Length: 339
Ligand SMILES: NC(=O)c1ccc[n+]([C@@H]2O[C@H](COP(=O)([O-])OP(=O)(O)OC[C@H]3O[C@@H](n4cnc5c(N)ncnc54)[C@H](OP(=O)(O)O)[C@@H]3O)[C@@H](O)[C@H]2O)c1
Image (tube, rainbow, N blue to C red; front, side):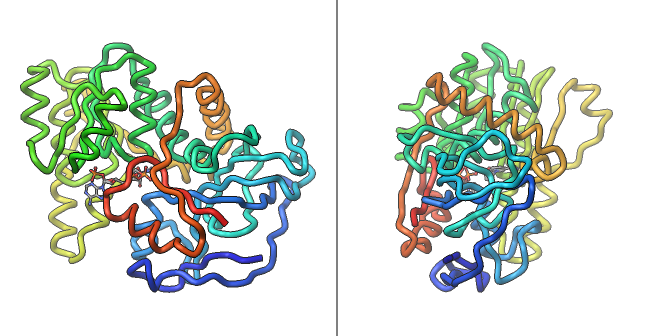
């Protein structure tokens, strides 16, 4: 079988190579999937630059989500049949013609779901659902701020927040994305390259503050978001895009400093808090939690609550282009690569 290896850290054009490898064998709890397409995730960009701590060493197989058909499975897999079309979370290894996934995070899907939608359900929708439903438990009329709102996770967060009838503030970095956010129902789209989003939000909500902030960026924006929280506020931190984009150590240190310093007494006094989320960690240590989230996400897709937007579909020989597009910050929704 063929697989795309990350062979060199750096620009997408020279980073990948398609190589032959032995088809993996599922253990008793695993499913082997014949991959029709795999998704890109922003963490893949960090991994390509050698900045993703959990990624395997070079030559590395990246990939967190695949869609395809069940090729083979272990003896403890009781709910799938050979040939079923499935979406699945992979713990790396997704950039390949065949990929292994743990049984709890493989879900049967109808044959008609477009491949980009299927992979977005496995990662971005599951992340957004965990963040909004488990971690912060958003409620009707709550005022919530979504950073990078036009992205894959951002789009799913918008859909889940609309379903809960929240009042949504969403940040992005271009006019096109502002239009996308308006079209998707964001009440207050904010272009952070043109306006100081903190001032605008403060003006709109007064000193009652926000109820929830979703932050995958880190750095200064995390501190700014925390300061916007009101009583009972929750800030979910699930990425450090700003830190990863800093090239030299001094800029990194400055970025780390800008996160702010926090003490539990401050959380107690203000009745608010910051909580982190790492899906890979949960999937590794408590896979049953992610399995349950995935089930609920598929149901929400079937009910029409979640409907991932596919912002780009690329054939395998244009993988570098797909990576560059996601890295450019111009993409909206999910990017998928087809074999
Ligand atoms: N912790 C977890 O388990 C988990 C799971 C899934 C995803 N995530 C994180 O969630 C985020 C979204 O993931 P995704 O795959 O759906 O990607 P995405 O949101 O489609 O793309 C990333 C977006 O982040 C913003 N961004 C990128 N670099 C930035 C920088 N240096 N400073 C500020 N903003 C920057 C850009 O939006 P604008 O230019 O419009 O601001 C960009 O379009 C990523 O940070 C990812 O790592 C975390």
